[in-house]
Image (cartoon, rainbow, N blue to C red; front, top):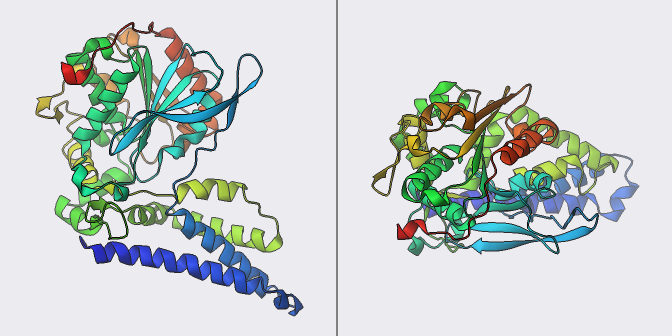
Length: 422
């Protein structure tokens, strides 16, 4: 599978389906078809519209579309994204609220690198902006990164997080969502050992696989069944010549999307059929629920092959975080070195991606942290998405997280030292 031709073949299929959708939409909308006493042409145009939009979204990076936030003064303050730290594989972004004084809460959202862009956390950002200064990790599409930039695996990811935390200071409150939870824990432990003055005040881990063996899911079962050789053979491809990262080994976003969709194929198929009917009846809109959800869900990015493979091997198979033997840049990270970071665990009762117990395992690893700085919350009836962006997050979890931050706040540091200089 590790051929550019394979990568380009997938992109060709995507491009062809987008073109077929555009053609069907144009043909079905031809004025003369209005003379035919059949709904077939409307259905054809509707199918084409949904098809064209869906396949076009797969290669588009979504915009944040966060234009303003209401301040304490009751006025709308415009919002812009400003890079604080720029790196080859990901940036640290700030949501700059113009005309607003610095907020007492400073939050870093650690976005997953699992096929979707950081914009998947848009609603999470929107919910936090009125009460916090919000920063986020904005990971880049691997196919847009030249091979000359080198590798990017779980160790590099951890060092990026440690650097970002250092940049923001010890009054920082970190919220890691899903996949980055174990690596965020490792980055905090690295800071606690090498530069304790730069470690964040609080860390909230939401639905992450700290110990994948704590509770079985389809994801963990897959990780146990497949060998690393099989995984490399079926998942890894080389980026084609049409992209800046030509020749880079990646786990392609389109391949990831096919895996996402296959997990709930019936539900997705029904959703698209219903949307086609709504478009044909004239009941759909550009920002209806279907388009709002799938515009984000279908927008996928490639991740470096070494990051994907090292995640599966070291986090899921070898359980290096779960067994506290994770090594970063030749240094054994000891999670027990965390003694002054308040840690809260959030899980969803019906989470089928990271089941209850997987994230909770972090508290047992924090042997140096007093119980007074540990907290956990299991949200009844909540699935994976709901615990960070859905109704459960808005109504129940967000207020609890803000209360936890306030209870463990830390004053802003006057000076900061860099991890690289230690």
